[in-house]
Amino acid sequence: MRKKITIPDISKMKREGERIAALTAYDYPSARLVDSAGVDIILVGDSAGVVFSGHDTTLPVTMDEMLYHLKAVARSRPFSLVVVDMPFMSCQTGIDEARRNCGRMIKEGGAEAVKIEGGENMAEVVAAVVGMDIPVMGHIGLTPQSVHRMGGYKIQGRDETAERILRDAKAVEEAGAFSIVLEGIPSRLAAVITAELTIPTIGIGAGQMCDGQVLVIHDILGLCEKYSPKFVKRYAELAPIITTAIRTYADEVRRGVFPDDAHSFN
Image 1 (cartoon, rainbow, N blue to C red):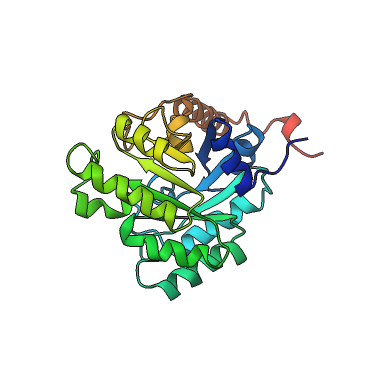
Image 2 (cartoon, helix red, strand yellow):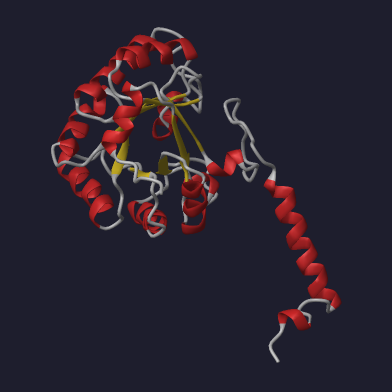
């Protein structure tokens, strides 16, 4: 029987050179599928705002929305470690507010860890939350909640900003994070960060030298047509399959073929 993944397990994977597989999920059935496939970490990402709710960015996502998605995932009782994104403005308005909101994710939502975007600028918040015995996953590089400052979803760290990103990584580690997401940075920079940190790095658009990888489930299944970043690999093209199934259903209803006797009660 599969063993429940815990924070110490994720740390051990880094020490033993075992790659970490993470994937997003936003609802009960998706969480069950992801967990049954043996993924190590389920990230209830604020990317739900884009792929699930149709927003152009993650900025409109609220605490209540994240709690809704988190609770649905937690009800699947996964063996995977459940990590939830802290949405924009849930941790940026002060340490007390950050503690309160992170605590809600654990107490009300059933998360086992939270993810906080930001580097040196959020290190104090990360340390405060870790001080409450709430595990924190960091997130640096291309941070979607900083999309306006960056002028869009642009690769970070190709210039003098590389040194800042390295400082961000070390600050988050020193603040007590158990792992850190590296998003949208050059592979060579991600390799340097991964080698210098003792905590696992989880890459998304950061090359193969990270300790693990995370992607959005809608992307790998071919269900998101809004964008297709270079780092996304589609492992299935489910959109046409689903469309065909729905079209067939609608046609059978209109022709009076469904429901037939096999799908009716006597």
